[in-house]
Amino acid sequence: MTCGCGDESSVKSRRSAIGGVMGMGLAAASIPFVTGSESRAEARTLLESPTPDEALAALMAGNERYIKGNMIPDDHVSTRARLVDGQAPHAIILRCADSRVSPEIVFDQGLGEIFVCGVAGNIPTPDIVASMEFAVAVLGSGLIVVMGHSSCGAVDAAVKHIDSVESLPGSLPGLVSQILPAAIETKDSSGDRLQNAIAANVVNGMQRLPKMSEILKDGQDAGTLKIVGGVYDLKSGRFNLVEG
Image (cartoon, rainbow, N blue to C red; front, side):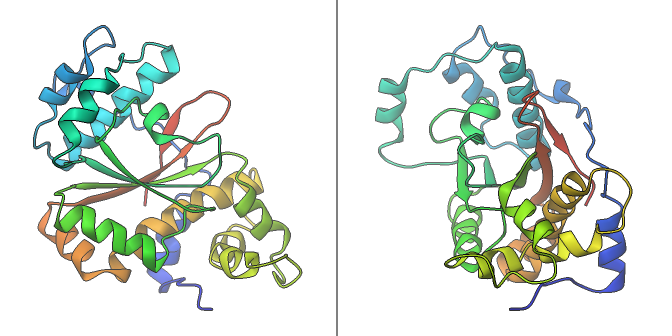
């Protein structure tokens, strides 16, 4: 299985993210976000047809609400009725399958607001890319977030089996082999080896997505689609963006 490592310039770009997990403090004031005391319906009204930057700022504002325990209350009964005839999620999240990582909760988003794709190690598989293409081309989503997290077991497996994944059980060798590039390129980096590999794996995912899909690449080139990534800290609850 190929690793999708990319050329030397891509590797250097990825390495710039090693140990570079950083809270970017996006300008959440670009639209008047709710504080948690308003309703989900009011929050949704503020996000009708958002730009990719507005969608990202809304996710980061939601993460702040989640951290502070000031989340917006949901009326799921009325929301279900509203969503019967269609959906228009403002963001796509590629998350790890880890049970502690729920984007709807971490970003304080309601039903129909984010399009979530999940797989261990948050790697872009062909099926996940096809799902993203649907969200971009049909549903009009303008933002993709590759969401890694601290203490990721899939990345840890790549770090621990960097020389060979064949001893892993079942279908894990095929999955973990796609994370090996991050483990390899961070092997000799300073700092926490696992955390470095987690950040690098996020950047690898960000860079692979447009290479795997003309739809995603065209959207990115046109400025109608933005691809970002970050690492969710299990202890603090904070989602920190990484440079890709």
